[in-house]
Amino acid sequence: MDVLSDVVSTARTGRPHAALVTRSAPFGRWLPASQAAGFHVVLQGTCWLLPTETEPIALGPGDVAFLPRGSAHGLADAPSTPMSDSSAPLTGIRYGDEEWPTDRRPAAVMLCGAYLLDRSGPHPLLSELPEVVHLPARVGRHPELRAAVDLLGAELRLPPRPGADAALPTLLDLLLLYVLRSWFSEGRSCDDSRTGWVAALHDPSVAAALRAIHADPGRPWTVEELGRQARLSRAAFARRFTQLVGRPPLTYLTWWRLTTAARLLRSCDSPVSTIAQQVGYTSPYAFTHAFKRQYGTPPGAYRNRFTRTIPSGQTPLGPPS
Image 1 (cartoon, rainbow, N blue to C red):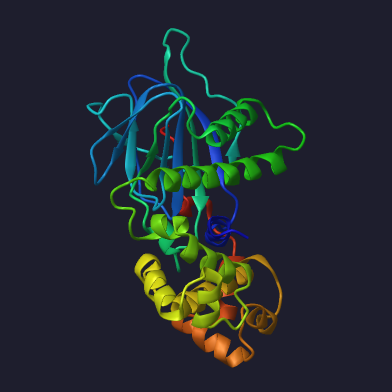
Image 2 (cartoon, helix red, strand yellow):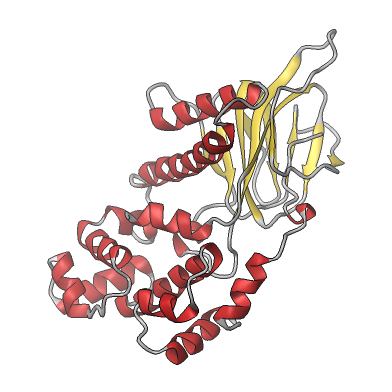
């Protein structure tokens, strides 16, 4: 699996939420901070996204706004519109366009949604993202992202059709991947892309080593072996990897093994000893000790936390209501 796909599949938990929302002016709703990463896509009309840390952002048709840390924010027809708190958290999938009074034209038609993320060990690739990832619509740019938006809008405009339970989560996962791919591809030419994950994913040597680690985290990798994957000497590879990724190669390897183990604990019922071997630990005791050091809890207790039913109110990211 490539690095970006691996990061997303490991970070995501549960099923995503989404709705198609129509609003007539004036409207203004304040959305509280959430454990979920949210997104808003404008299909028709215009609106303003009001972050807490940056200036208001004008959104037009085709614009995508992604909030990777679930930061509190507002949505309004204008920055000056008074805001009221949202009392309706977005949970599940809501089909069908909401109606508006017949004597008022809609100010905005939006796709709004949220992805549940495991915040206990966020990948630095996601941590480097800004509070708001804004991808303006541009002719000829990011065609895959535009196609995913069109398909999502088409699915949500009508009542559920055969296959909707399979189509919607898949389309929402595609949307998340295309948002991240678009952001990192644009970041390649930014002035600040000489270090960090934008640079790491586009550096042939470091990217080759990352692909090797992600393809087989259980293998007993050494710095020298990873350097051969990168086609660099041991010292040159270790220096470049640490500079771009922010951690030495084997430190990242250990962290990724335990991050992968956390995903397996959430998503399958394999015994802890089996998962330990799968991510490169021959001793369940050593695995438990390392896992507890990273996550603050033993593997079994971590798994139990994710098998409980999560109340819907714990994912309070929704559209303005």
